[in-house]
Image (cartoon, rainbow, N blue to C red; front, side, top):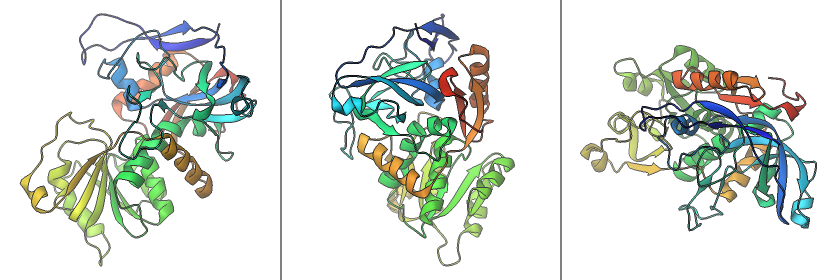
Length: 361
């Protein structure tokens, strides 16, 4: 039977517990008419996986393979032409179900069902195989290694919606600030913006990460640990456009109070996460300046296809921070430690035994 990695239940309250990883076996999948079996070659972590281990994510459960990011080879299919066409193809997986194309949010009556570690969706990518509906696949971009391909789906989709759909400023020449550069989503927003010809600025508490972001095309960066960093950022902006058009943020915290000093009237703060705190103050100064805050969560199946098409056309490569090989609990725990410390610059990836070692990372 195939192997996978899940969390093991131990006593503890949400936010205080840290569930250990355990290796489990899962049933050998049998595809229905419209389904396929993907032998996974690589899988990647997201911040939600850390929240699941802390029981801070909706629907956290046990015995379900972790992770929603994955790439692999279709090794068997159902009988329908829509499924059979995928046989032996290298694919990436749409990380959720229930959201086809509505720009406002999921159409499914049960909402958006993300893979990995919850009771809402039995599939997860930290496994040797996964059963998928054929319609949830895209061909893996040929210019990506296995590790890079696995690093793309959830992060690429979240970044796509936050930047292209929600920021309202995915246009050449616009000034965009990305907070917390180093995480997978922030880095994909950077790559998208640079490819479009935007002036992309970044913030981080690490000078090393700021330097790496500039190597990827960032126009400038500021250390948010420095007093008055927002004034330094203004100095970096073009002389004829001394304001930000949008901020793409994954932290929350004081982003409104800082952003209101930087954004143009009617500027947008597109927020895809709130890692600093689940609450964020809203200020009258932001109201008077007509600032908008727009929440953004992953994206639709249509946005996923649009994202993959853009990555192909622009030859973009997700940044991979570190790769470990195999379903080794200790090695995978080490990746989670990287995430807890926020020491990574890019995605944290597990290559699986069937990968054939095609990754060069």
